[in-house]
Image (tube, rainbow, N blue to C red; front, side):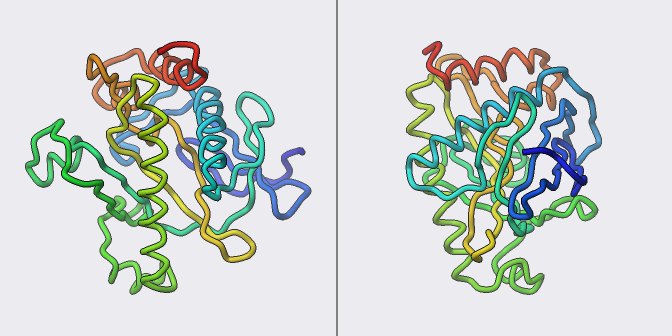
Length: 239
């Protein structure tokens, strides 16, 4: 499968048309952004690591019966996937308080939440991705019904359960993560985008060390080493 015309370029990926109108190719970039694009950099090989990690995690979810857009990893930086109409809601799943949740609500950083929290943000860079409630989602016509929002919440929690169980055997704690969903050509809601340390927070279960993009956000360094370690653990080459 070959790339044809460029459909879209975002912060982390380029999306390309293919000769099959129902299939697209994501090209994973080495760029790094944080704080709504205010902090920018790049690191060679980061895109390839995210592609490989996403590929493995999409396969994990597929084995659990969770529908996604993933089809195949074409090479180090390119993933083949189904075309989907994007639902412009960023779904934030939180198990432990940190980041904006702690800053905005004063919850102690590192505090385990009493239940999995699912939040919605408006996927809109110009507005700074503001928080959404159900009524906002309906007013903006981001979904067709409350039932669709309930299904998205259900899928987010189901994905979280699979990821927590999977990574518990890898010595990594799933702190929080961002998901995106879309509708396939049959109108079914499926998981899209990527599953990588760019949109997951992973902490080493023993040391609490960040193994994700927080290393870039906080200027800790060692981002590529951390991403490689996550991939190594996923592949079962370490604890």
